[in-house]
Length: 94
Image 1 (cartoon, rainbow, N blue to C red):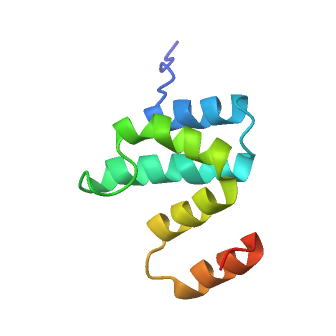
Image 2: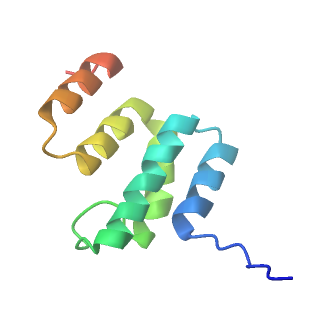
């Protein structure tokens, strides 16, 4: 039989940890996307999403979910001003 072992990436593990901590699924998915895209695009350490950022991102999601969601959206879509503005309105932020 040709079975491939399951591969878990750290962003998948982070998402599962976030869900287990009670973070809403959409926010957990956004955080996972930030971690994944940071790794795949090899962004510099000055950008959110390094492996070392993962514990802080979890804390941010738990303590300030709306602000963190906006930060994730801004991180993933920095040039989509319409999406960022709509997210701010939806979340009741500025």
